[in-house]
Amino acid sequence: MPKTLAIFGAGPVLGLSLARRFGREGFRVALVARTTDNLDRLVAALAEDGIEAAGFTADVYDGEQIQAAVAAITKEYGQIDVAEFSPGGGNMGDGIESVLDVDPANLQLILDRFVLSGVALVRAVLPDMVERGAGAILFTAGQSGIYPTPFLGNAGMAQAALRNYFHNLNAVLADKGVYVGAVNVGALIEGSVPHQGIMSVTEPLAFEPEVIHPDVFAENFWDLYAKRDRTEALVGAFGQ
Image (cartoon, rainbow, N blue to C red; front, top):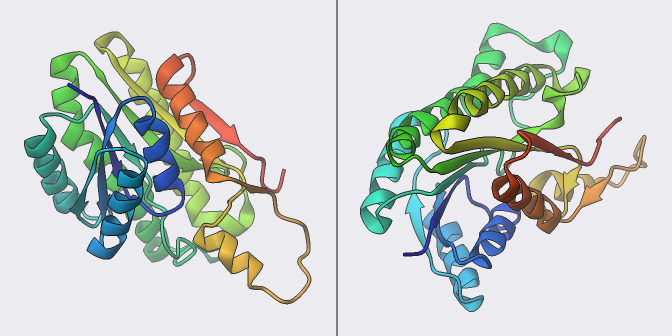
């Protein structure tokens, strides 16, 4: 029976590249996102590549909806072998504040988005993986969790917390057959909403941002999953 990759926060850029990369290894793909239009387009694109895929509607910022999606995927495919969490789709800059503008409200918003929803996903998929003694949980993370970046004040705080979480998870789950890791985004992902936003700016930029194709990130995810020899990778070094 083929293995199942479930992408929580699937989109037409990184999500599609991830699905294709794992699909080439024989995985079928469960795609989780808010809108059926997005999911239908992704399923159709993957079908053209000969990759089996199905869409499941859920808001990945909502713990109850995550749990419902996990149940639906498990019912459809039997189990989730790899769960990948990409919470930063769409206008991910909304709600991100520089360090001097961080307050309890905007910090809570970003913690809910990047950390608490990630914990909800882990709680939903981990028991079955531990019972089977096999599985993997992958996170799309941000370089501000490694390198403090003042203009990403509340986002960096959340990413640092997430980084602590996935490192600790991997450490305690290694002898249970479950791998946990993350690819840290240190550049603009080509074709993503942030990249499109930068490209639409007509004024001269203070610096030339690094732009990397989503397939490069997808390859790093596969490398982490296949080798399991480290907990994280950093692709690009935005601002460093």
